[in-house]
Length: 575
Image 1 (cartoon, rainbow, N blue to C red):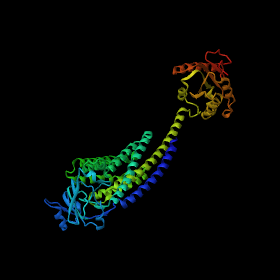
Image 2: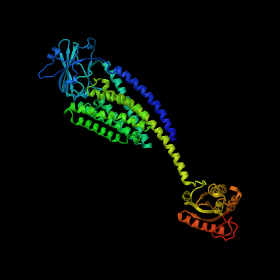
Image 3: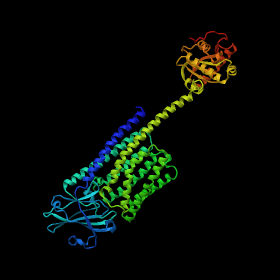
Image 4: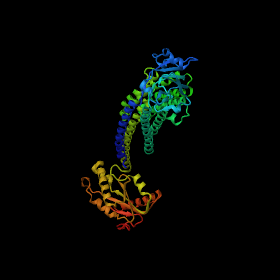
């Protein structure tokens, strides 16, 4: 298939596919945002834990809890979190579950107060959290069954890092609401996963043909995003229930850092090289090194000074985001063909990344969709980036077609004598040497060419050379090779059984109308023999050249064959 046609077809198909999937993603996102938080939201109040406190006492003294101070301001430690009174209509639904966002915690115990005064408990540790993890990185605890309805919830959280809060995103959901939420989120994450795998396979296949540096980098980027989606969605915890939830968060942090790093590495390989020349290249390298260092440090050292590590990690994303305007500006200055596609693809992820950094620094409050915004924004980014890659492949196909055409033209120019259009000496020898069987070599030289130049000038002499070349082309068989090998010297190679007559060549020259109607003739020397090696050519040429001198000595405007009597009239090989 023609490369240019393939590039155009790729863009057309991928454009339609991307547009359709973007619309589907937006539809899924809209439905998910409306229903993923299905259930009844609950407010909670916080109390730092002290030794020897009992749930019964705390249920009776709700005024001790702080409902105003932002949770993250309490710092690390152990806490009690008391919910508002449960809605009466929802509390009577059997199988109701309390969901909270997954945070860095060692142990969580949920105490449920029932209308008859009974208190029952359930909970998990970071080691056993996998069996309670749901998509969207939430932990769901079904309230223990009891004859009386539940009226209030009290969480005891031990070893809380409290980076964003102690107990966040609290909702009560019925089994039907929980199932609907899981289905929607499963569709969203499965769409992203399927799309990521398809993009990896597609670009690896194209890389095998195009060998562009940005293609394997893009595959690594999508692979990191896929790993981050699996870990941040809690699918990793569901697949490996024995995995410690805090370790899952470590993996999540590393994969998010790796994804951000690969974005910058991809940009460096995707844009033209001058875009990152100068200070931008070492600056981007420093940003990558900083983010990699803080991400790995968090994964290894946490929970040691986890609040400091988290702050450093959040700050390390700022240089990466700050490099975006200079990159776009430099791309604009260098008239990059890929600027608008890159800006369109990465606009949404960069905005959400800035919001997440602001949330990590305490400038924005936590929310479920902000916490999961990376997967959604990167889903749209991957789709749009695939369109950008298809567009670049289209440009590459055009560039390759043009380069191929230029190469063919250059090759023709390199093989052709620019004045006559015949083969030059180099191209003539490369095609002549190695021809099988005996070959006939004719050397033709224009008679008294210096006089021609002196009479009608060098421009007129050049025109004479062009006319002679045209006459020779018309007088030899199609499979013969003809070249200008010297100033006014021409060479012809043909098989010995070819219909090639030196007399016919000389007659054709005499019939040609020359500039200023001057008379122009030529002398020809011929020789027959093998032409398999360069030494054969030298032997043939010397013999034909001697025959040419014999023709000149005999009065010019005639031909002679090497080894013939001086006045022979017929070549044995002539037609």
